[in-house]
Image (cartoon, rainbow over all chains, first blue to last red; front, side, top):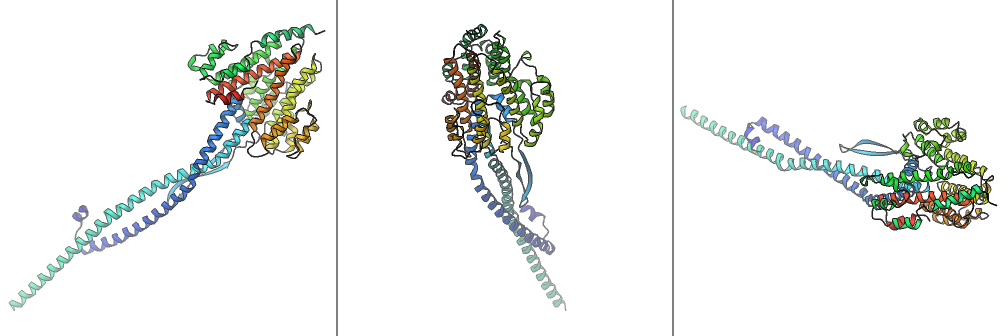
Length: 204
Length: 346
């Protein structure tokens, strides 16, 4: 504020420019507030989706137990051989924009084909893991989106606060200061003009 | 009068049987606090020589698994080396390791994965005519089949079109089983004590066929493919039984096998599957495994003086190796003692 006050020249031109700037900053602040509200509602929406985490955790624990049982029943080498009959999981991650925030979108392109696993216990374990994969990917996508949006939300909040608490008040103060100075100068001018007029009248 | 060579084989087998770790002892080992403790217990067994070579800090389930499999192969081929007059049959029977190794190579080549000798069952070069180093270097399944053209597995080449059509190695694996069991089945009739030997080989074939049908039907695999997967030799569950079992509805599936000794087992298995999404496939597999090795143990108890005993001994060796793998991997993965004990067969 003091910096602004110290550097500003108290002229009508500066005052006009400052008023224009203030209007621009106010509009920006409103836009940022709108963005903040939208991001907050987006986070709220995503938080509802994240509730599946408990289910996914449980699913994964069950799958892990089945995998352990399969390894124990077949042995490491045989289980690895059974697993090699399963094709790879194909996932594509593409960036999408939510209110200018770039977040990842995870697309499950190809689920591993497990129908032809020779051993029944290996198939059972694979079935459990496969069932958890879709939810797991959705959860990962949601968590990554929340992280990116929350980061942006924090930044927007800081910007709105900076505008609300620092920039706009200092601009208003500067405007008030310049207006005061201009008023004083106008009064001075008026008084000087009056004195000059009185002196001229006396000489006549 | 018994063939003296068979008597010699059976007598030797009786001696060898005493070297096996009894399932009860494995049950006790299941209570061990760590894998290290399991390895210590093994120092009193036939595995001592190999286990003692591993430094204490380097003991892990994979290394132990390899030792168990190596010993298993040695036990099989030791029996083959005894002059018994049935060596050819026993050599053929021992080819199950060769078949398993080819199976593993085919699976890896199917998905374009590299596979090394360490991923195979340790099978000494003198026990097999298959050139495994060449198979390991093959680029794809077709090359594997081509390399096997000069062996007993020549029919793999004929199945390549079917393999490509369905995109699964199951077709080729079934072909390998068919070659293996087909050859054994051919030889069984020329053996002394063929009734007992037939019972063990035949039961294994039947259970494999039934398990294939149950497993693939549950996964809604095309019936045409399931038919392709059946072996061409049958024992008590013939093709007509299996076909009607395959086509039967949910409720009367077990009835299709009522003329075979497997009706009760299948009924129990089907009750575990519920024909639905949450089918306990692993339990079905365990049930079949227990049934099969149970037959082998029964043979050991009830037929101590014929060739069936020798074959049952080999299966007891296999069961011991499987039990020890279950135990060591279970300990490695911190599976509870009770669960391990439940999974031990015998």
